[in-house]
Amino acid sequence: MTHACIFTITRTLNLKVEETLFSGRSFVPEVISTFPTKFGTWAAWFSLKSSLDLSLPFKPLRLIHMENKESSSSRGALIVLEGLDRCGKTSQSGRLYKYLDEQGHSVESWRFPDRNTGVGQMISSYLANESQLDDHAIHLLFSANRWEKRSLMEDKLRSGTTLIVDRYSYSGVAFSSAKGLDIGWCKAPEIGLLAPDLVAYLDISPEKAAERGGYGGERYEQLEFQEKVARSYSALCDPSWKVIDATLPVVDIEKKLREVVLDCMMACQKGKPLSQLWPSQVKPTECQHE
Image (cartoon, rainbow, N blue to C red; front, side, top):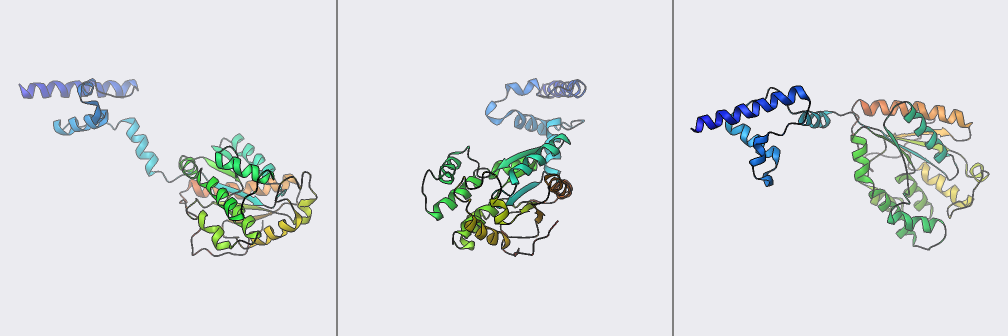
């Protein structure tokens, strides 16, 4: 009697497998519906499969997808644009995003601070001179704003989406250290955030930037302070940096940016591993100019 029951269950399961294989529908054997749901449908299925010594002629499509996703090292690239205020980062970020999107790449445009979060709104109020905060406190808020997006950032990159980010940790450290805070202290809360695959630094003198429209609208847009920020940036340059002359015509900057970004994306698609800020063995280097 027992063998007859096992044969019946086995036949039912195999028929369902064959039906699903050729129909393309998701496979959840009807027999499993009688199992206690707290063990989970798939847990029950594999337990039953093991006890009956069944063998599937194929792997369920969902499992194949999960295995492929885990084994694949291809990913999106983390591209960061940095520079002094009014260097053209936001404009070039938008142009780069539009170009990659039109080319069919999975890409998103991000910006820090992200003023849509609770922390970001506090930062926005501070930058607009609507509130006052201690320099240490505002630095930690900027860092917290980046940590708010850390998990989502990694998920996006691992899923194959390239992120174009307007300002990142380098801005936080450069601006805070320009106020006189210790650069090591400024770096500390950033350690563990994802390291960019490419930092495109749009290079412009503080004097040239001050001549551009809209300058002076926010707290940090002061010539003397921007000169200090420029010196702080120079102390942060590492092998991931590419320096692009921000005084060139817009189309020329765009062309140079596309070249270095596409090269970076190719390296990430070939399996370049993710890394974190700030590895102690990476020391500031002379910036590579494009």
